[in-house]
Amino acid sequence: MNSEYLLIAATMLTGVVILAHAGLRGWQGWLQLKTRELEMHRPEIEGGAATGAARIELADLKERIRKLEAIAAGVDF
Image (cartoon, rainbow, N blue to C red; front, side, top):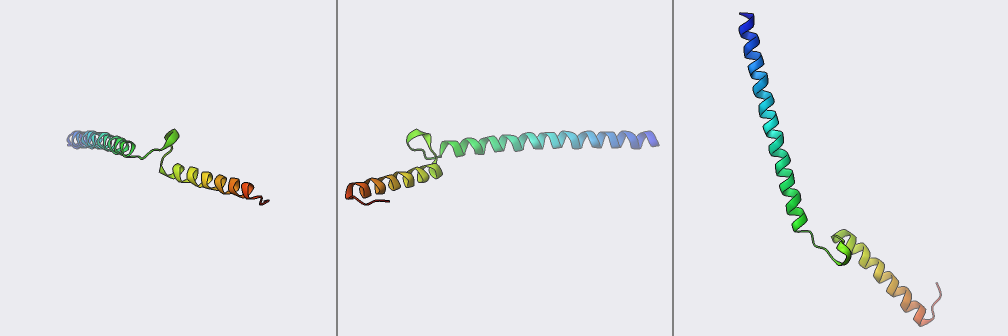
């Protein structure tokens, strides 16, 4: 009687492990798919900068232009 319960428990545990492994493999595959989709749709500018970095780069360029214009106009900082 005990051996029957032990066999049933071992079989169920094996089934749960197999299902968990299959689920985790599927999850990893789905994450890889979404990562590839994000990489394909990421807008890039000069130097391979992404959108957030592009905004920072543009802000830096605008600030440099303002400083150069101020220097050209004879304004001291």
